[in-house]
Image (cartoon, rainbow, N blue to C red; front, side):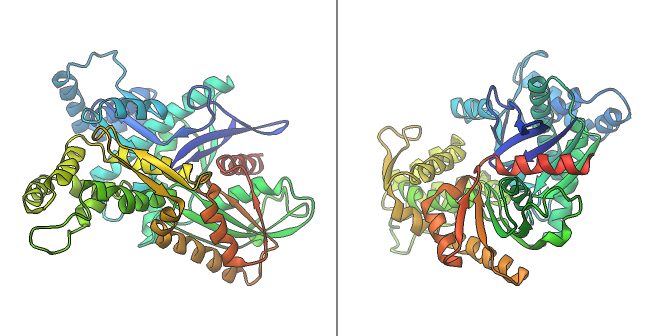
Length: 454
């Protein structure tokens, strides 16, 4: 059976066509959306879990040969951690967050792995590692969806951003699509196609149009923001060839995760010493503090967890007039709680969609630690990424050579009144409509699957 698969930066979802349009499948308990996160009791066990799920045959033999070293390390990890052969060792979605929050020092946790797929300069072993992470997640999601549906899923359309990375975009796109294709085939899909996420969101929105319109689709996802100018409506709907209807599209690796990171850096890292005075009178260097919260940057995370950073922070604590706040950062690093910190920033961003202020409580770091954040402080914190998002909108309109009749906004971060106001300011007096902020892309991918897999 065919399906649309939104392997998103923040959430994953899967849909299948039915007589009412699109049916979303349960992929995380009884929920239709699964947070994009994975937790394994040991990093090496991810590869082992992928191999166990592959059916016997040439593909499995090839995988085992290519991962021989990692599979040997997995056996060693089982012995060192006294993990039984039948013990569950890997979790995705809400379960992954649950295990990470319960014991962040133990195991391996990754959030939003899609953010890393287009990273420049990845060595082959890192490409293989991300293949295994994505495959492990896709295998689990597919199995859950098939149980919910009661049928096998074999042909899929997967969403993709316009660009996975801002720099070296073509090379990054090829690398990311190759990883996703390999993972999808290892998960059991025989046919794999891709569709731009903003176009998919537009195809979903198009189902409700009663007259033809030129629509600017603005999809603010977790990892990327993508815009597309599309002619749509009754005269266009259902056509298998839509290239003439797509008038312009732009996209870049700036999205909801960047807003969370900026908010964490500007409003939470001062609690960990980022603005504390040094004995020398010089300003506090901020790079390490920003590395701590840059959870979508492989290089930053590697630097923050390195031995050199550990030694640097010990010296920084001696040099600081408030050594106790640097001590908090050292504990955060030692306890591997920086992902948890950014998660709290994300929750604050969401709360500020409906309130003028919110309280962030960080008892997991230190009892009584916390701060109040105002919506105006969120606006100041995210000014830089938000400016880039509005520039992408203007560039898509410029490519099209015409103004839109409507603006359709989707994606989780698009709920924020700050973002909606910025969208309205950019294009002036154009009607702005909302869709399903989380389901538009997967619904559109499913509609496209229905059309191309006839």
